[in-house]
Length: 160
Length: 471
Ligand SMILES: Cc1cc2nc3c(=O)[nH]c(=O)nc-3n(C[C@H](O)[C@H](O)[C@H](O)COP(=O)(O)OP(=O)(O)OC[C@H]3O[C@@H](n4cnc5c(N)ncnc54)[C@H](O)[C@@H]3O)c2cc1C
Ligand code: FES
Image (cartoon, rainbow over all chains, first blue to last red; front, top):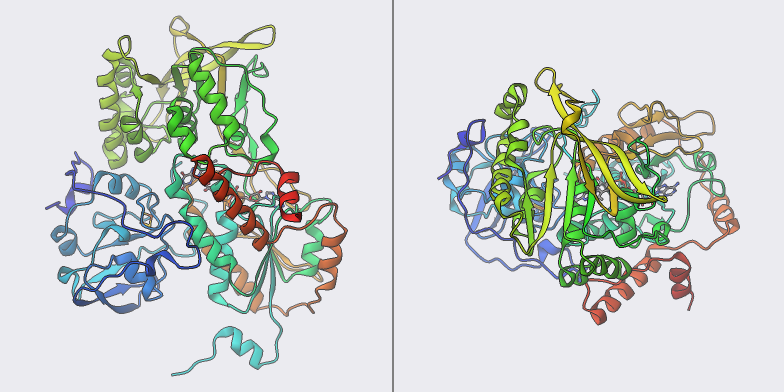
């Protein structure tokens, strides 16, 4: 299990966990939004999103759903620009340290993309790569504070 | 409990709808529209785009071998499907459709027109034939109608890319990708043919040159790592040069950055490739750190090579400057193509204030509404300057949308009439292209792509697009 502390300074090693883009619709079917197109029918699991304004939203989705799909199915304000193909970092969320340590480690590509996420924390993950199961039951997933005042002082926290 | 949404509440009070103009259809334009419609779905949004095709640099910048990045087009297409959203393509805000007029007609005008000017190196010989800016070069291979007339000679054995960001990596990687890989993408067929021809005629090495060390460079790890697994490609770093990058102040920077420690791991794999430099049969991508171009060399106006200084870093960690060191360590590299990838610039627009190449604004607001003139706002590259990935435009667009919404709710709306807009659009020289027209073009691009074994065959000429739509 990855320790959350690994992310802060020092040498960082990441295990090569099998890592591939999540299944998705073909690009042609524009009308049908991609996240509704996958059938998942596991046990219902309920967990909470801590929203950017500090409030909490409890959602209930079948086990096997990704956290990003869970957000979109419940109108939680989280982008997924590359549609879960592990090519952006817009689906950045923050897990509890306990959850972060429990679940499978992020793969190298996910770590590379997390580099670019604003407000990165030691327990940050990409929501399209985290699958909901009983370990997430009643736990909280936090949306990073991307407040409207973020850029006011002219500071731009992005590379490229 | 049932609650009136802000828009329903406005209707209930007998107030009019807001009408907002968005200029530019890249990520900034679409994200800002998306967040405004989330605030108030009854708001009317009209998007103006100078080209018949939407999506800005997602279509004309993002590398053709990164199709996943372009999936965001589906999200933007969903925004365009909102009942109160209209797209007016082939409609440039400029002399025919002036910004000033938009400000008279609408309640708010949001400029999201990006930064399509290009920076130069400012060194002797830069105008030689064979030197091209990355902004033009990427738009050439991505079928942008403005750049289809570019001409090149075959570069011979080597090309040079000057720059230390992901755009430079895109260009270098694409110059070296195998012909079947290139063909399968939506890269313009003319460019695929040209690059394939250059490789057949001997193009084997791309030098990627930058003035700073790897710790100060803007390359990101996903893009660096990709080079290690690209078929037929050998990325190479000189061990001595990597060591030079690690002066005391740089080590202090490295220690603080998890991202740079991970870059170092990747570059060390490229150092391991150094011994294969002479023996490899692969195409070579050779990094040069701490080198600045001094002079472009040419014969009879045609590029033959480049002379570069050896730099050293000095200053506090986080504030180091690269300055030329000992001239005896200058290096000359021959090349027949030089792509300078040293940044974009904001282009001036009548009615838009600019100060040292930046648009002064507060939370996205450039000028508040005055009598008869709508507030002027900015978002995206035009607002922040030309840096950042697609996702960087999200927080930015949210801030602008928030500000526009707040200002609108404190002012009275104008009396809306469709007439002045229609009059302006119908008097301009060429026809307006609507979103549904674009979707016809898109379907045709995919159809042609399927027939050709490519992801898409993009339209590259405006007259051809208009003709296709007309028939
Ligand atoms: C070569 C390259 C590769 C990139 N690759 C990636 C990548 O892989 N991943 C990633 O996340 N980001 C990438 N980016 C960054 C990303 O493209 C930008 O962050 C983003 O496009 C900026 O959005 P924007 O809307 O501000 O500007 P743009 O995308 O440039 O959109 C501006 C739009 O305004 C239009 N316009 C300009 N002037 C007018 C006018 N007068 N009237 C009407 N319309 C006008 C333009 O035609 C254009 O459509 C890349 C950028 C470049 C240059
Ligand atoms: S949606 Fe792009 S990485 Fe998760």
